[in-house]
Image (cartoon, rainbow, N blue to C red; front, side, top):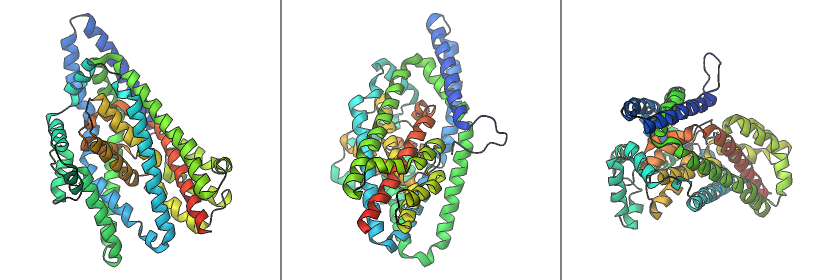
Length: 434
Ligand code: ASP
């Protein structure tokens, strides 16, 4: 998404966003120093009051399509598993490995972010300032409503009584039920039901594909505004906080890289060893082309042809297995993305001082896993879904501006993990079939 072709080829979008971050931060820090020295505080406040809403324009465009995007992506994702039924055991094993590996990735990420606590590197004063800027009453109320509920009700609320009401509540924070998780459940149930009446749902599938494509196009437009939006958001933040956000951001990057590294160098080799009876070293040598392509393109979809080739030529996996697992995995199995989404949400929750209960952290785990299924395998594909998960646990969606400037680097790394995860699953599924 962040690679949307621009008519006049100048600067790739991710570089523009990084530049926006740097310009916004430089101007913001200067404004912060000027305000601290003289009596310019009022002028700086006025500028921030203009910059802040300007920065939120592109985010609003993304929020605007979140519901249709989540619904169409998940329903289509599940409906696309039609082949899984046909493939029986292969489908089931793929599903089990997918759930296991993304679950492991999210839990790993959340454990690290809970231990390192990079979002807590801000003083109480700075946190209060951020919350004044972004926190909302509705979010607090929503949190309190959720905290007071017994576990049985929280679980029951995942099944929505009125999906339309949940869609509204999930976006504006007024949901008293399952919120976005309930919307996701509805989409999953819808997709599963579509599998049972395939002869009646061709038009519906086309319609959902159309809705999905339109949402992605709107997000593409929004992302073109992202460089300016990020500049304004970062300016507003640094003008108030100075460079205080730098240490938390560095800690966040370190946690993401450490989590991705552990999944790549410890979890995958262990799984390969146990379930595929393969030497991890030979495996990684075999998939190196796919790893390099994923790193370079930040897109699982763009890497699919290379993954298919290395699976066949280097790993010597049976073609029908690798085609099935890798094609589904390019969108449906995104371990790196799931880990990243979980870490971002918890990190920003720490930054904004939103204390998440254990139940809410479990919600983040589930939603990050589901978001991994619904994320398009394109650069920056996870960003709209991160906003969804953030809002559903009461973290201000605008906070995503803090991490947008560094997203591309992390996208390259998480996509590498996504692709390696698909190939790991393909190897494990293929082995048991022999
Ligand atoms: N770029 C990722 C992929 O294509 C998706 C994301 O995490 O944004 O796999």
